[in-house]
Image 1 (cartoon, helix red, strand yellow):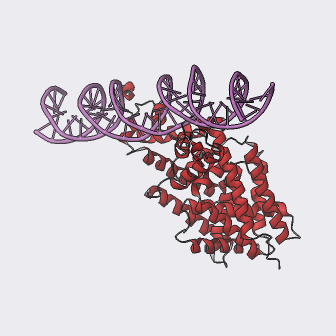
Image 2 (cartoon, rainbow over the protein chains, first blue to last red):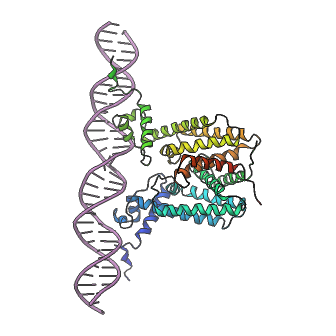
Image 3 (cartoon, each protein chain N blue to C red):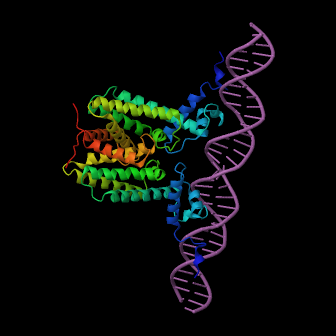
Amino acid sequence: MPQASSSYHHGDLRAACLRAARELLEEDGSAGLSLRAVARRAGVSATAPYRHYADRDALVSAVAAEGYRELAEHLAAAHPEPRTPDELASVAVAYVRFALDRPAMFRVMFAEPCDPNSEERVAATAAISEYVRGIVHAVFPGVDPDALSTTVWALVHGLAFLHLDGKLDSSTPEVVDAQVRAAVRALFSVSAAP
Amino acid sequence: MPQASSSYHHGDLRAACLRAARELLEEDGSAGLSLRAVARRAGVSATAPYRHYADRDALVSAVAAEGYRELAEHLAAAHPEPRTPDELASVAVAYVRFALDRPAMFRVMFAEPCDPNSEERVAATAAISEYVRGIVHAVFPGVDPDALSTTVWALVHGLAFLHLDGKLDSSTPEVVDAQVRAAVRALFSVSAAP
DNA sequence: TGTACATCAGTGAACGCGCGTTCACTGATGTAC
DNA sequence: TGTACATCAGTGAACGCGCGTTCACTGATGTAC
């Protein structure tokens, strides 16, 4: 019956902090993530998050790690098992869209010169890398997937960042999608000239 | 004879601020650029830079713009007029090296969610974009350079960022160079499969 | 079922910090006569 | 060549801010008996 039990003990402040951090990132993409702002948003005193995160960096790393997992889900949702360049292009489109839909989050994941010692982050990154390798291997069974998967990842990642930073035309989602597809198509149609 | 004239009037504080900013960025890549720190480094009061920059953003934009120009010089120095995929790869290597040699500077140029209204920045960016187009057109005279130049730029830019963020093996410059060359080579050798 | 107590998850005051920016100022420079 | 004065490029004190982090604390929860 004590429904108002939520007064003092929060229940799951750890998760609430992550949620608050994400909301703040999505609302004001430019500002840096601050522990105090997260606490405020979670409706909790400024020091409460220290029960769950050693310091600000720990929170940021956790946010980034969640971002990686989410990115992986989005890619898988775009196409579970790509087998053709076109299907691969759909995954590429999902990657770039993910970045454009959550610019600040994407920047935290990649552009923040954060310590690379967070196991959570390293693991999540490795998972994405492996995932790309798998796709490339499936789409090009005969090719050594190492160089090519690096190429594919870098291409898509570069497209994401160039769009994010306004270096390419990002006026509408359709334009972006077309551009990404064109770039991936270009990747698979060029042959050495001279 | 008054060689000690340099006491009060600085001479060229505008340039000195840019230099100080670059030094700070190269020394401590992780910290954000602060106007006060720049002033301190330039040996000048905290408010002196306001004579030359309207606010912090103006300084950051100026630093970024200088970075773009410098990047352009580096690329041109790598190969003045690339005509083959291999020569193009040399330019790509220069691009990635530039990023790895000045990580913080490169991040200011690209990863800082800065206002896109700085004319200086927009112009510098357009110059790079044009430059890449020109190269691609020279290397592949018969191909529509639009999609392909986007592809090339994104690929190289993505390689730079993935290396910067430790997602790829960056143990030695040689390893990086080889990886970049391999990626560019992969770009020009794959053909659509099914 | 009730009580005693350890543990846990929160509070709130306080610290010292560096920041961006303003303001009235002052020292140096250069120009007009 | 010398003087008067406007202009320019600096100074330094001060503002209010939000931040990360510490500390001693207190309210709620759960477990042992």
